[in-house]
Image (tube, rainbow, N blue to C red):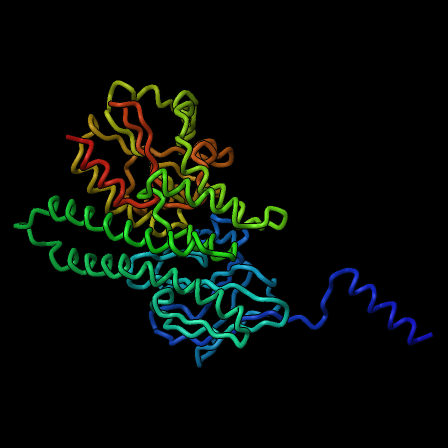
Length: 404
């Protein structure tokens, strides 16, 4: 009778697709630094917006890093994309999901799990995780998949090295009043566009031959959609529909394809007719600005978004100095769940721009289908067009080319 029970229990486990012996995991060793927290965060990439999002919503686990720099995450979902991230020690404004992208100390790494019982080993320097990490596994097929993830980084390296060199140059010459900073900035924008287009070409070659949906999705997150032609984006969209099995699609992949499809669809101007509320609960209508300014810049941000707040304190201040309100009006769009955190951030950052509070309805976030911030939209009232951007340097380039 006891043997029959054991067989019956085994059959139940098999029928329920439960593997009691499975332990898909990642182990890692990080070279520590006193300026970085000894904690690593694990995000499960269930959606496209999780890939490079600074939100904690995608974080599923965290571990204290041991004194010798080791950590591990067990019982991971098989055949799934994950991201680990670390954060520096700073006084305020940082959270577990915060993402740094400056070409120097980028603080995240991606990996894809294999079947049950697969083990991946990661080694990296904690101060520049993305630029330094490598992955190893004894399973050849899984190693090949993760090597293609690392190839994405290889295609991005020229962009990141350029960003780091320019960042150092700006810091060195920032106080030199004899320099024409506007000309330097314009030259920078032209150069970064060339670098991004070059990296796009490399990412095109990866995605247009990719057989793994997770790798395709991660590559798309680094792809400069704003710099790609309609033909390039349409080619990627066609490939994504033709090359993969439509009967076995993952949410990460489907949301990535949706993002790609949205990039081919212009934003409807109907949102300009709506009524919104300011951070002070006052009603607001874009129609009141139609005769008082030529361009409206919408800055989508949250208190936990470090790149957003850095841009607010630097780049947006520079834009206000360069263009008066008759030319450019800057409006913040905050989506903090806790309004007090938004108000505190506005005060600490000396953010004097008009602020709309979009939570909980998220009218503007939904209208622009925003999946990651920072995010910017420019309403050009001269030619009645709407342009959207993921990076502030794209905003700067647009304004330099369109405000004469």
